[in-house]
Structures are given as structure tokens and as C-alpha cells.
Image (cartoon, rainbow, N blue to C red):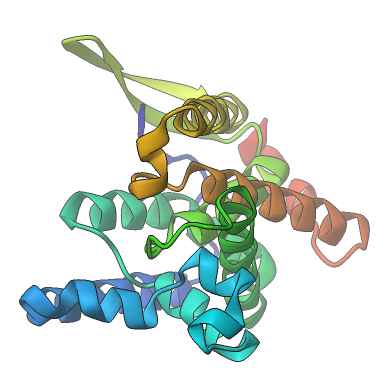
Length: 236
């Protein structure tokens, strides 16, 4: 299941969304330039859960861990990881930025990324595997999109074994299915001993998604955003 486009046009240029995508692309080019030094770089600068819970052992502090979590949001483990993340951000991020405004959207994105890192660290506090990727922050964007635009139509590529088809799904269906996949994949990963050695940070995805959804609910209830009123015709 892969999104191709959504049905909601953005009323203003998604400046921050584009800059985030560009920053991730530049960071990935930098990673490629490191060659065999990449693994050493990731250990030194990316977010590593065990360092959060045992700072004295690794001679780090809270500021170091916060900086590492921030940097990790712009690093990726490969071309597919980068491209798939940036595509999801391109599809869903512009509308969330449209509602929040540029500066607030940036803070929202980074906050969800931080929540995602904490969620994964809580599940695997002894992990010495560096966490990289914008997935957690983007999951927060998906959570907000679900709350604010549940009836937007998402043109979706569905894989049915060796066949595939293109269909339109309500965002509510697409994003709930996405979350369910993360939940069961994460649960199964916990049952595998080798999961501690690497893989996909499914609980970061879930943590970011829930953080984004909860923030979206709070912002709407506070009266600071009015996405349903603004896009009621498109959502019908």
C-alpha cells in the first residue's frame, strides 16, 4: 500500500515541507560521501537509545542526546528509505503545514520526531543501534492528517501478491491500515531476538503517529486551527 497523491490542494506554498525534504536529501549525499567512515559517524552523532538511559557510561548528557535525536531525523539508511519517507512527507505534509503555518509546522515536525525517538528508546532501552530516519517525524504528520482530514481521498497503489491496482481510499482507511501494519510489525519484531541488532523502528513510527494525532486534537480543541471548516467542501 503506497500513496500516490491526495485530494486536498494546498492554499500556500509548503516552504518548510520542501526545505525539510531538501535537507534530508543533502544529508543523504553527505552520508554517501563518508564511504567506509559512515558507520563510525552514525555511532558518534546519531541517536542511540542506550546512551539516553546510561549517559554516564558513555560520557554524554541530555543536550548531546537531544542533538543526536535532531540530527537523526535527517539521516537515512539507504535510497529506498529516503525516497519512501520523502514521498510520504510530500503527499501529506503540505496540508498539515497549510493548517499550522510555517514556523509552527517546523516545531510540530521536530516535536513528533523527538517523541518517536523516545518511544523507540523506551521499547529498547539497551539498544546500541543508531536510529536514523525521518519516519517518526513524518508519522506525526500522518497522525495530524488523520485527525484533520479523515475524509480526504488518497489515491493508493495496492499490492495484491504479484498483482497491483490503483484505487482511492479515504485518508481514515489508509492511515488506520498503515498504523495497524506498524503495530503488528513492531509486535512481531519484539518476539525476534535479532530485532535488537537493527531493522525498522516500528515503535518510533507508532510513537510519532500518536504524538501527532494527540497534538492535532489538542490544537483543534484549543481553537487555534480550524481544518474541518476550511476544507469542508473537499472533505465531503
